[in-house]
Length: 247
Image 1 (cartoon, rainbow, N blue to C red):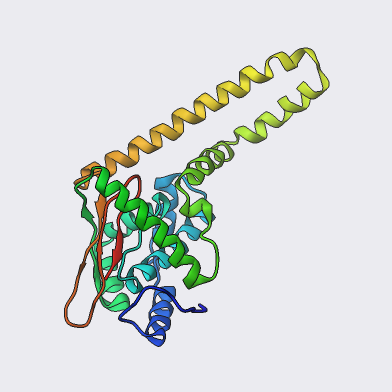
Image 2: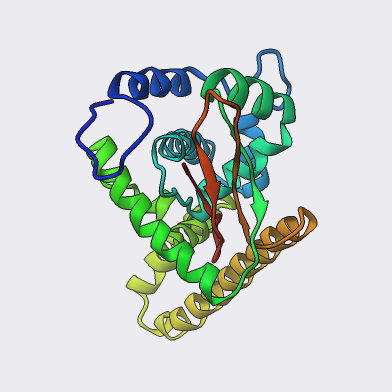
């Protein structure tokens, strides 16, 4: 990872940041000899394509790195937050192997108080996080992973592809192009598909909220519990994502 001068002060030198990043990159999320590895479970539970899930894990690595180097906070998107929530379920992997041996600091995930102030704080942290991402990785945050509105739209398209609706509709559109009388039904069918897609997308959002409520709240933040060797902390609230990490 190519580093650049950042506005934020950090307790880590560039050399320490590089070593930390290499450890995060090397961390194995999929345990060997597991019938349902982490990456497969992540894709299945979120109805993602497998390759989309793999890329989400890579973006999660970057988010965690930003948590560790930023004293002001880093806020994840909904997609990154889904990876984080699942990783927290793997308690030994998350707390012992990842936080304890890889990051050398504990990054906690706390419920937030909610309300307008927390929402404003979350939006401010999101903007700061995206700026820090650009300065650190010299690239734009991929919108399909970091833009919540873009991620919702992409979910619908991936779902349609997953259940083979798009390939099945190709002959229909071909026929409508050849038959003028059948074009009358095209807007009706397209409208029907949009309604079904909206219901599916809304259902997925409700399921996500239910999972978060079971964990204690539908908004959250994270906090760092450190000994003398760590200066990273977290805090913040969610609008639809999570709060962030900082020192």
